[in-house]
Image 1 (cartoon, rainbow, N blue to C red):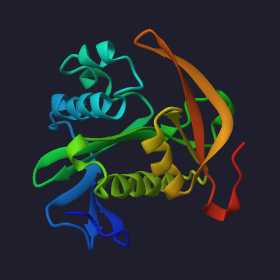
Image 2 (cartoon, rainbow, N blue to C red):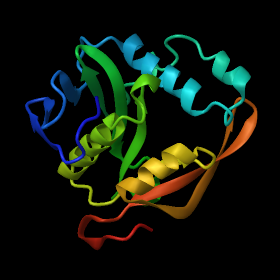
Image 3 (cartoon, rainbow, N blue to C red):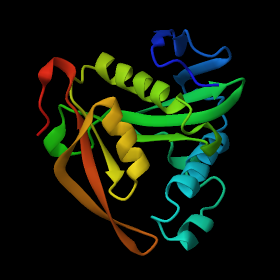
Image 4 (cartoon, helix red, strand yellow):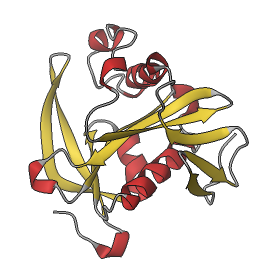
Length: 194
């Protein structure tokens, strides 16, 4: 079931309630009791689905169970999970920019959903929650990196209001050099990205 786009989100304590959204859906900060393997599984399945045809298939096939479990929590990084009817279906990591020259920016480090939930409005809800949290943290400028060849992700962020900048990174993933392009959100108070 798709979540209405006009849903409003607000946090009560550590849980984000989706008003007007699907019953049984919550977006919240991860807790000590959350299964890190379940969160890692979201990354693993999303990578295998979203990066098929971009990242070498041998690399994707070799991603082991629990690949991201030990690295989900890092200093300065916050993490949300999307839980639907008791099952974790999405996750996002975000915080202050990791780039020294952009310390006044918030950064979305990752946003992933299980493939079954992609294209149904859940990603928009998770992105809205992350953007809301970054704004509460005092960031009126936000950026992220996306693989240049990942057209679906680029379209997703562009529809949300992100604009591609001239910055890029070259990453070696599975023996293939891939370009990551930077996207910046600049709608708040007409702030411009650098």
